Image 1 (cartoon, one colour):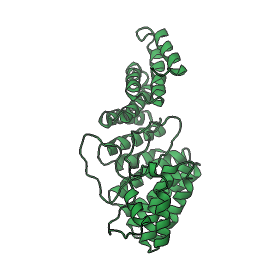
Image 2: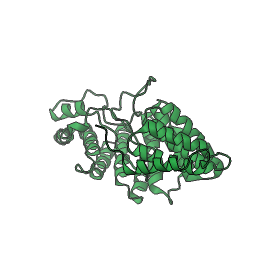
Image 3: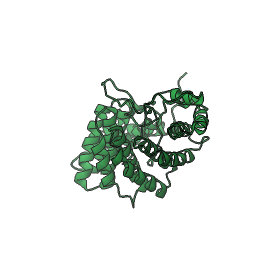
Image 4: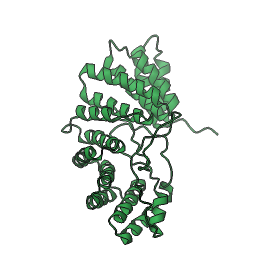
Length: 332
């Protein structure tokens, strides 16, 4: 039995029929644009991409460049959610160039951020994209947006082995998330900063900031983030020689088996505000080892950032990080 069609989709499809593209191109494009968003929310990414492609085509880039760029950005998000990051990156690049030409820094920053996510999915270096996105996003106007860009830049720097550069960037991400009231973003940035401190050998600082990450991810609200932060805290306590606290934190992390030892799901595009979603932790083996009192093998296996969902293209992934960090795209 087919699931019922949500009323918004019925209404939008009726609007498309009422305004055929050959007679009412702008009205048809607008309805297609909103239909694409609604289909994305419903998880129907291929259908969403088709609707947004129609909108992008009907919004003439010469007469309506801003609307055309927004449709491109939204289409890229649908393509990425459908597991087509290469095609998504092309849309984000075109949207970014259009927003830059229009002198719209916030929209430009959103497209650059999304481009960084797509390049990360492809196993490419997203550092410059996230850095440029951070430059475009005014922290006084959109602190949570700027925090998201800084957080992903810091994670990319950490993955590239540039931990010393990542530390101040992530500290800024935490401060901006706090200013913007983004508790989930604060927790994600604090978790990544904890990994940076561990990479730099600053164990005490890692423990302190990972406690902040745990507090920002209440177990009843964001159990995946809570489990990931607890797993990293277990490793930090072990590094400090505190096996009692390490085992306790590891057992607590293992209290969320549904969130451990699994790769990231298909990313769900986020529309409406800049959200953060912690990565999926692959720390079950480390947590089991610590909770059972086994010693470390000597190699870092903390839950940290790696590229997003797997694609057909092969990639090199640092063996020292064992957790997906995936972020939803940002709406322009």
